[in-house]
Picture 1 (cartoon, one colour):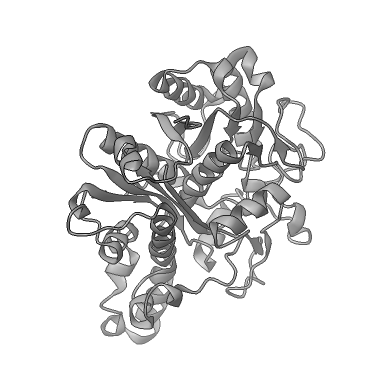
Picture 2 (cartoon, rainbow, N blue to C red):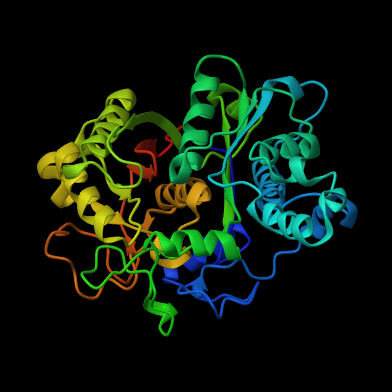
Length: 407
């Protein structure tokens, strides 16, 4: 990992995001981007002060949905952080793989309104290219000049992690020397909010947004939607060394499984999630006792947190009780397909800085969630090896494995 970036509810730069994480900053508040007064849930983790015009002209920005704007801008920041210049000599060896769970839902909502009120002839000719999920990856390639492998993962809340893992595989197998990878999402919209609220998946703690997202706490009542993007520059080691790049750490393992059980509910005992963790460690050539930190999926829903705790215990055995675990969603909310991106960035920074972000709002631990979730305050600790979990509707389970780089 030679470049990192994040656009999140707790900061729009890498430095601000990291400072927000280690200080336990809450990014959740009342929704401001539209009138949510008629909604059962009226809170979210919104990105504040985002200006795409710092990265592209107004005409270009107008033709991109917010999810694609996040991806393009974060990708440019990650390339700048990596000091990786894409030119005619290397363009075909650098690819893009960016996941999203929903894609351009705001464009779809707006154009549906136009269709109903003004007729089909008034719909924008840009509606389809603005809406489709692959446009984050496609427009990132156009804006950066990356001509290598280009793809988009759409695996619900596992999409960002699948994108990072698949990028890892492409480099391993020689299809690329470097990949721009991660996840993006901008689904905090009237329809997106209504759908999740109707599914009873969200927190309805509207009067107390500071404490609404409380993973592993017995008083949790659902997740809080978030938005943003997390992008990583994953590079073949010899190339990174040859160009003198700074190296945050190494990616060493990746696995994905499926519960094949239910549309939205995890399989009992977290068996699919535990297999993903075990297979990622096997792929990485590590054992549970080597793991220092797990960035949990940790959604703050009644089902996930207990199930994930069981999965961690199954995969890590007795080591589960000795490993620091935290849910950074407690601060950012749940970015859906973007969550795997910002959480991979958080995991990589924890390794690079030897500091573990906290799980804020963990005040009354659920008796069934009895591991070390780093409550309230970040912790200084040597982090040699870390795992990052992402699970999605449809039964998708993904685990990424990272380790500290020693030259």
